[in-house]
Image (tube, rainbow, N blue to C red; front, top):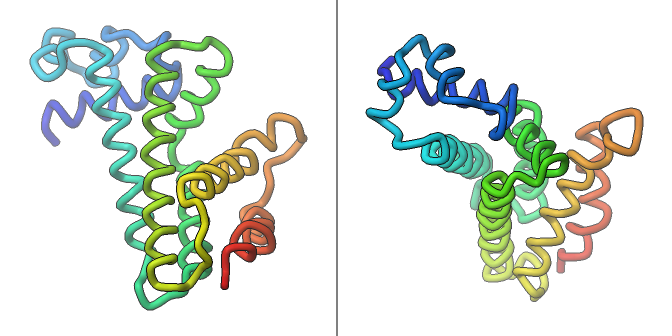
Length: 189
């Protein structure tokens, strides 16, 4: 593995454990077993390093979701599979969970900015898939942007927020069932 990748992995670990605000370049250097100066040969500052990690995470999310979508499946089948992949993703990526928690607790400006960017990317991705389903006449005509936003926010409410006010996380099967019986069902022609 190359030095740049080692730094990215160490920084991801540090941001996931400590959040943006508490992560230092010294910590990243120690975790990557490199000198701090080595980090600066690849990244000019902590913010640039953070952005690189977050945008890589967004690309990974898209790639994972694109891998499950098939033109041969109906909108509802694809939506179900993408939702399951997103739920898998919430468990696999501690960084996103840490960022959400940090934003709620500390209102760190760069974290707020990055979460807005992540939300925009995800909503745009959902909107593209809704528009494709409309174009294929699988679902009825809707305001694509609003429905994409609704789907994203409902997902976040069930996948993240629910466990903040309840003593357990909602099981994946229950989340998929609720989406299938409500939002997706209302879209199908």
